[in-house]
Image (tube, rainbow, N blue to C red; front, top):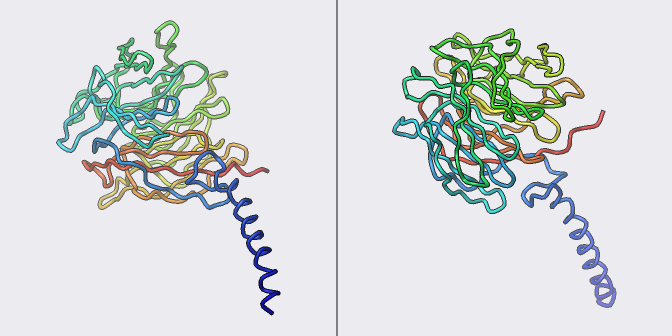
Length: 335
């Protein structure tokens, strides 16, 4: 029988080699060797940031992610900016903002980073209407025309070459306000407000609409989602979040809005681990794998199918983290 075993060995080796070769494309799908196209999506840790912060803002320009402002462990409000290189998994410092803010709203438009509003103190008394812009081509910040309404914990959404600043709070009062900034002429314009005034919200643009998600009012987290149509100037309700949340992030990835992070505002509350995604075609939210390190006041960005969660507080209140995590999502399901 030794001759039979000898004859079968080359066939077995060839079969194993074929299996390995067939597996390589699936493992490398999506451009990220750590994310397999056929595998269940999971969060994984990346290199920690240089600073431990909370109540930050974040935006992605090309292969770089910028994390701005927030609180340091000393509770000092910082103007610091960190830059994360997605390809190299490496953090460096970038030029600081002209104005130090916590609870800023951040958006990217035309290859530039815009930072809007925020608190300038740690007691939440001093709020600003400042609009700061960073141009990576020149590595310089510019202060633009401030909005008519100072506020913090708002959302800034880029859509159709314009910036939409919505919600937030001033003087402890949640706001329903929507204002639009045109970078071409440097002017602000007031638009119809939301029906629900709220702060600590998240926003995203998808399929020509601006979505404003969750937030809080009167110390209570909300599940409400409102949708604004820039063409008609009308607001309407969209399906509510599965989890009431505030102090969280929302991004568009793989054709869906992904909401993650936040904190519970009830006594003894914790940060929020569940992650959910909204499919506009199906009109419903679906649960995704929970975060490794649940945080509030975090930065969130996307890159194709990948979602990044950056820094933030691992427990409610003044808590600080340098965690950087990513999850790769599969393509949206077909109808």
